[in-house]
Amino acid sequence: MVPLPEPSGALQKPRWFSRAGQMMSTVLDFIYPPLHPCPGCGLPDVYQKPETIGLCDACYAAFPWTEPHQLPPKVWIPAHYETSARKLVTRLKYHDAQYLVPLMAVAMAAQIRERLEDAAAMEGVSIENWVILPVPLHRQRQRKRGYNQSDLLARHLAFVLEFSYESAGLKRCRPTAPLYRLSRAERQQALAGSMVLNPEAIPKLRGKQLLLVDDIYTTGATINACEQALQAANPISVTVAAFALADLDSHRV
Ligand SMILES: [Zn+2]
Image (tube, rainbow, N blue to C red; front, side, top):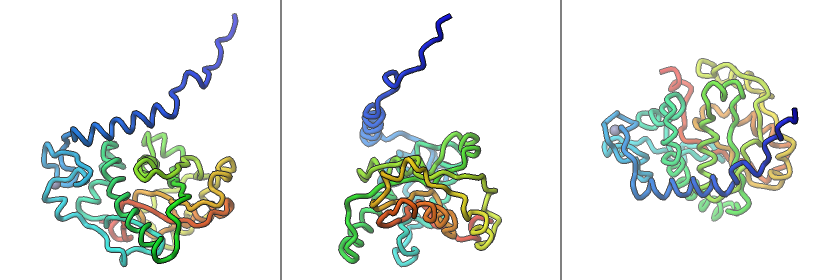
């Protein structure tokens, strides 16, 4: 019996197709925003508009925005991990609410544009030459969840900001236990050496300004492990973007 040929690349969807599809659905969502319960309080039938991050008026009015002076250097995060921002993250992460990704990415992008303009004016940081990459999940956890929420946010941010995107720049070489009960020092220890750089991605990252994307930023232990691994690619700089800024106590509530 003649073996069936392997599926060729020609049978797969071309890249432009998924990009055009994403653009189309973003445009359609803008014209006809879908209705969902407010992710903050559960109020039914709220228009999922990017300008309100899909929240009802009351939740949006109380949204816990960060101020620039509350953020560590080279870390850009629009919200504190509280109230409706916390609900957005948990709905995306644990309840498969992937429709929230474009809304959350737009809130992140608005702040990134502002910070980029400030940094360009004050520190001479170029607004060109950026590559976005996500903080990876270990493949076991990704298989269990079905998706990496940081990858979804990073992918959409790259689309909105028109930055290059490298999904497989980093890999987690070993699974780590959930971090939420660990202290700052325990987190550093658990994560040290847990990320590896994908050698195939090095040419795409060398000499670039990297924007590393995660959903929540707590102590920076995960980001430190990523930055350590990225140094082998000799980037110009590594900046961090996340949706929510948490402190250690907020994970235990
Ligand atoms: Zn609400």
